[in-house]
Length: 146
Image 1 (cartoon, rainbow, N blue to C red):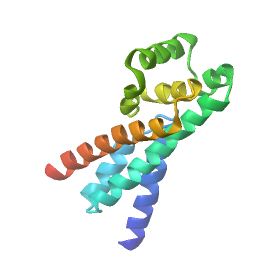
Image 2 (cartoon, rainbow, N blue to C red; image 1 turned 180 degrees about the vertical axis):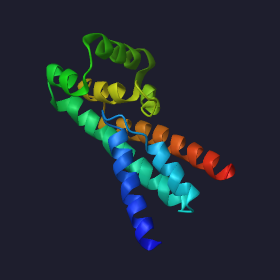
Image 3 (cartoon, rainbow, N blue to C red; image 1 turned 30 degrees about the horizontal axis):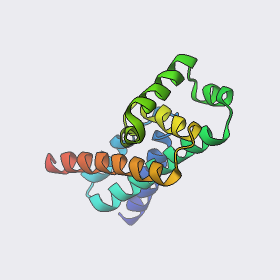
């Protein structure tokens, strides 16, 4: 069981990290599976949150340091998609980063935060708050219905 536990934690971290980048992965499935197998909800939520925030931080760094043409190419974003993400960010401000976990819009928001040079401390606080809340809710729903 210890081997399964260690692999589960590592797998969740990797899945959570990659799910926050441009790859179409779902860390929620991995989290739910591990919860249903009796692993610690607190540990799982912590690992998933750290991995997912680090993935978003990767997007932020990409936006901060890369040129717009490189960003659009790597993220496979059209000009229109990038403009819409920038408009959402401008319209809703910093607190839109609490929704960095939302599929389709979350990844571009974190990239735009880097492009706009949002203060890293605010980025980390808001992205972490949103992602942590999501994983807590998922963990609760999975364990309450198990």
